[in-house]
Image 1 (tube, one colour):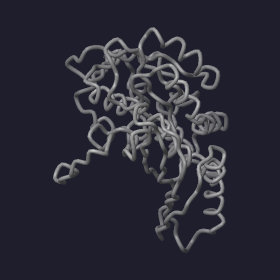
Image 2 (spheres, helix red, strand yellow):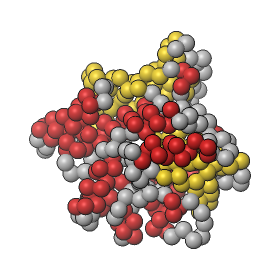
Image 3 (cartoon, rainbow, N blue to C red):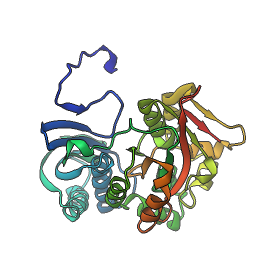
Image 4 (cartoon, rainbow, N blue to C red):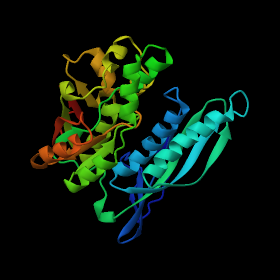
Length: 319
């Protein structure tokens, strides 16, 4: 879609669209740059307050993934003028505002559109020192690859829609989505991570593929080490998949190779689109254990799931 557009170069644009990174970064002065991102989506849980909270964290996480500090947010919503009580929208916005406030992000305004399909999210602006930016293009051969949170929110969301998800599974998914990435971002900065990305709509393998391509390496991942939300595998086995399962496979194409031993059900979770997912971090192996120990203080499911190698025939190889 963007291939036909001529996008002028700008010397102040430190991170643009070229490598599909989590946010854009624009240089203001030698010691200050802006980090900007936007994200909004349809409801994935029944409770409007929780939906607002998840939407806020999902948007803020992109700034944290770059190593930035979020400072302001603009709300974006689609909501029907007729047919639904506006108190629902008030609860959605209350949930989002509570999260913004808890993380020191100022709500400065927003925009709404009359639409039968509810959608909600934020455009978030943050700040960062230009020499402290963590992008998805810095992974080096030999790096350990760490995932901070378990995957499976997409299939669980589908399970909720069809009344198939047990209460404990819904709670586990909600707890995962509401686990903010702020402390993970701080830890990866202090431990000297080479690269990172936020795992969201393109799924673990889609975002890993972007990181591998941007960095010019191959990521060798071990499927058995990937943390899963309890109950997600069983829901995937029932075929409760999102449309993202198919589109994310198409997105990476033949550049991702999965071992024959990996079950179709587990493969579906690797392609499952996530909301407010974890960080995928590339770090020197000598620093990986220290980072993992830091992460486990707040992210108990964080795990080393693979390593980066010299670029091979595929960007991603899953064993």
